[in-house]
Image (cartoon, rainbow, N blue to C red):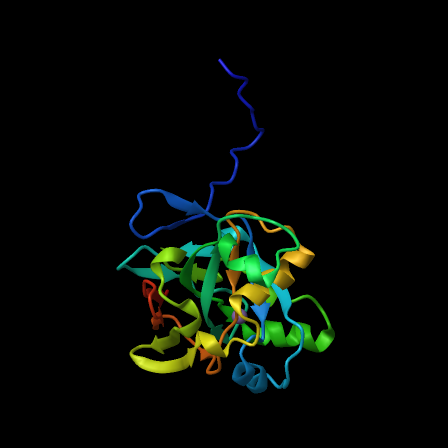
Length: 235
Ligand code: MN
């Protein structure tokens, strides 16, 4: 009988995402997010030009896994009067590493999913004004509803995919992954220069223009060409 590790408390459950075509699930390690990675979104947030990519994080258990073909639910969080949607392409890392070059980066990608970087914009703006960390605006409970992962080799050309979000059937965000300021491969190069990426990491690659508020009862429908749609109701 091997030695059984004992814990003083039950360990937190592993957060995981479904994987299309497989019974096994993708265990989430860390969640990295890229700020202002589409030019038109940078402009709507009051910035211009191509600045080096910058990153923030959400806890792994901020991920709300949404199963394939299901309208999931995500709670309206406390403390905010201005909960914003940010539709994003999510990269799932299958092989870790540090100092990964962009030319090698896609070999580290396990697959892709559609995700929402939900944002308490009022709190984020307060923190920005005061030069304080964004955690309360970005890294709250259930701030990352995410759909199923599609294996990278089953996606024809993610760099050419359309990305869009409807709220209650009306288009709010519509762009193309080709408009990323920093491509998926370049993002992995920058991220892995600062952190050692690990299998199980997710990268939210940034949102295009058109962010805006949602309220309880709204149904968000996110789409990226070649991936499973994400449907989530705010409750
Ligand atoms: Mn974002």
